[in-house]
Length: 317
Ligand code: GLV
Image 1: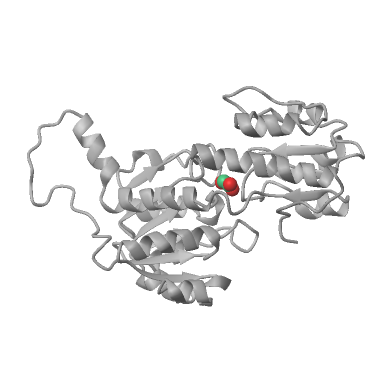
Image 2: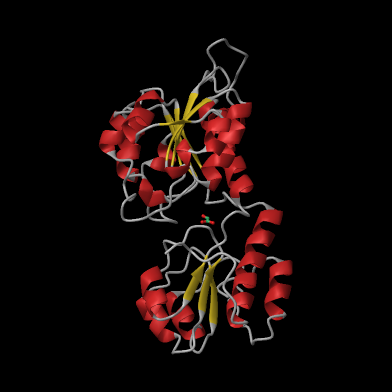
């Protein structure tokens, strides 16, 4: 286990009855060297998104590895084909973090649209202030603003449910955008170009793959409304961060809310200096019950595979 998880998940892991090697620095993931040493002889690895599970690491385990259980819904940190070709199962934790991530997404939408963090910084600065009709005016989310969801999956759908309650019009890309659940929420399925053109808020929810890397770059930002806000709670590299910084600096779009970064934990040097962006340290799923459920599901996947059963949540092939 590359980190300590919730007490419930740790108890479940102990109950597997195998010796556990746990990296237990609460503040930092294992270094590459520590990880390579720790996995030697492992039958199962419970990893987090901070660990790169590549061929070198798979080889370092020896020949007994049976599962890599990522404690995250995203699994772009894992060389899935390499693992599968060695007969190693790969699992993630879908489903249990949808609501928490959608809450965080909606927090970013509201914070960026209504400039809440900028206003908080202003108050903390000690500057003189008095109520003013133009002070911190932002986007009216609930007055029929359009939300564009890129990649309408489980998390995007949970965001769409919140958007419906906020009286937003929702357009979306992705295979489920034309399905009955989306239709019941009033979601309109569109192509990416139309989504970019009509959305007041563009929220990214697709997985990171070679096809989605830099899906939002200079041209896509230029195709958005100058008043648009971009929110990313998926994976940083889906948005070209340098292009985003330029767009925010030059008024090509109005604002952004980011939970993830292209080269995490590093940030593009321009981001910190911009007032029109809200920055979070990748906390989308950081609800206590959610993190507990993620940890337990990762351990449950290990239990299944070590018992010779199919895992509960294998990653798609
Ligand atoms: C978090 O980013 C996750 O993929 O679960």
